Image 1 (cartoon, rainbow, N blue to C red):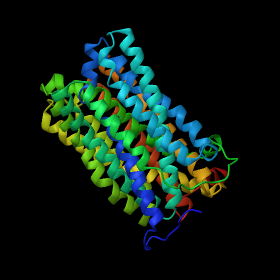
Image 2 (cartoon, rainbow, N blue to C red; image 1 turned 120 degrees about the horizontal axis):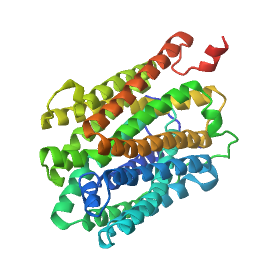
Image 3 (spheres, helix red, strand yellow; image 1 turned 30 degrees about the horizontal axis):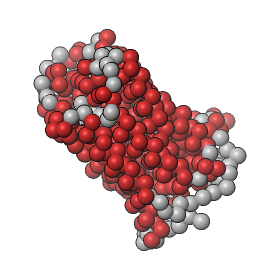
Image 4 (tube, helix red, strand yellow; image 1 turned 180 degrees about the horizontal axis):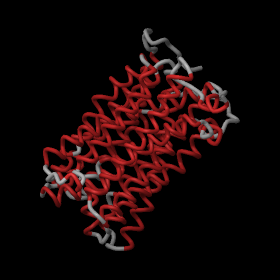
Length: 426
């Protein structure tokens, strides 16, 4: 049985070990994911890849993550959370090392094909680790989901913070291979560290389709989509734009990305506490986060119709605004989906948590696929400024969805979770 404590009680030893384990998974997975940003797009262009193809290389990772999240989230009970977690870490570590050997293959079609294959397999390992991580965290801390997830986002943010500068520095100092070799081995060391007793559950008869028939969940999923598509867009395009526009080195581009990840890392635990203690604020956090995200992307370029000159300080400041506002969107989404699932008859246990984790990962992956692919294509056909403006428009559309969500939250129920189907029936 899971260890269940109230908000004001001390954590058990089992909960502390689980929290350490999940933190190591978040940190090690994200640092290996984020090292590509400062130098890989430029390196891929030297190997004959266009901006659109680079976007597809980033996007295929998200597409395979999508498929992996749906399947693994459904069958997490049958596979076992422990097996899924450790297998995912092992696969990701191997793929990270293999990706570091791609500079030895011929340029053109061979290089591009191997990029797609290795990234796709890596995505399956990543989806296994993160799906089980979300489900286990929510299982062990049922009364403090947002607080715990917000705290774990510190380590996600640390991975995103340290990955770009470390990757950029290792690339400048030792070449293409060393960043992937070093971090791949680091990820492999996380495998024995995470061999602990994890919760289990009975199989479930529920499905993703039933989850997705709730209007509230659909609206929240769209907010998750805009969040991940924005991050995916920046992964694929920001480094090339910064190098061309401001003549920055890959090392400085890695430091530039701190402007995005550091505010996200610092704000997430605080927003998690607020979300748990004041659940009624969750929809409004998403509203404010969407407005700030839209503003950040519109001024990131800035949008050409404003006729504002691009400046490095403005770019860094807007990245900070985007990083903080994205945490306002991300933290409330998981507990809100989970509350809605429980109110609509889903059983409380690891099986439902696996479904919710899989759905979260799947929608996140759709955004991470669309962001770099469509963003890369728009950047190539128009400009980075216009592509960033499109991302801002998506965030603004999510705001209108969140306002609709907040309206029903306020007028239909007293509790933070509500059923929009009851409203439509009336």
